[in-house]
Length: 453
Image 1 (cartoon, rainbow, N blue to C red):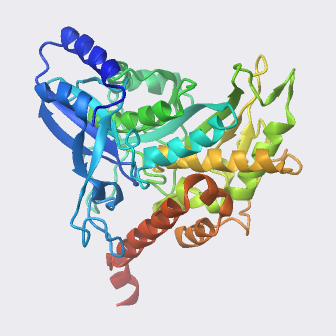
Image 2 (spheres, helix red, strand yellow; image 1 turned 90 degrees about the horizontal axis):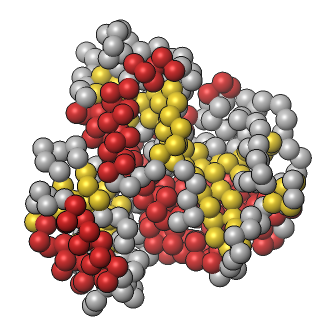
Image 3 (cartoon, rainbow, N blue to C red; image 1 turned 45 degrees about the vertical axis):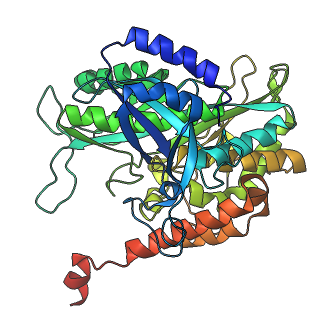
């Protein structure tokens, strides 16, 4: 089967090879349910044929565990003969990565360009959600904000993480939020991250030091291509980890790496434009009712969406309230960072909503898909979000599932998410996360012996 975008890819390849004649190898990447990349490395001369015809990789790769292992109860790759899925190169994703022992070409692949895309591919799930907006002649505009930690490369004697040492002072980093000095002290690794992003055509925005020692945030510019925005977020996570290793550090996007310090969030800013490019959330210098309806939908689907925004056991350690600013309640407000859904200050009518709930460990495709599905549900049903919250919110909401098992129970019964994301996918996702949770909990830690022996 010839790729429908083969001519576009052919032009991209020609331009890339002319600019990078030294490149001899190609990495083909796709993203699984856990948000991790899988793929293969090929000689560069395979690139042209892949652009025309695509390539094959096992479909079961999408549904492996965080450790890359098959999960009980999911037959894919176990009793189905482990069939291949047909993958197609993603136009616009061909670029250079520079952190290995040599520069390599890198390109993303997806099944969603084919006649029978894999319903459990995260990129395909997000595509379905975007298509639901397109059917109404609307297009989401999105931007991600992603927090991460840098740690020492070696763990301590108890196999725990160690706070990274300041490269210029040699002392453990301190938690000084928005410190320009901290950015300057870590500028070697941060600059290399930015340069590696530029080589991959990832446009980064503001850089800031965050609440935890060794914690930073790098923002991305607003994007009218939602899938590309999610692609860039996944590529960014890989880039940070690889570049940090070159600097003798470990980088982590785990939601709550240290109990005594702030967690890592994946904040998402979303507006929606119509076929003429007008923001449907704007009504002159005021927010249109649709923005509040969208927030009403987010509140209505928040319990069901938690399993996408907080997909594992550690994810829920982040929801402690207080100065951590990770939302713990079904709330919204204007310019309030303790609520779940915030309306930032709008300049020149740029009205949008910020989803502050997801952790940095969440799959960007699925987090965005669940968010957009909730917003569409609220707009279509004109849901009232209730009164805005003005004061800081610290107490947990009893109606919010704050563990993975309760969250999955809410997900599997959500018609609003199922209608947009697909019943087959939601069912498989819940089985996938339940199976991994069971595997994670089927382990005796040293603490059990210390406490109960």
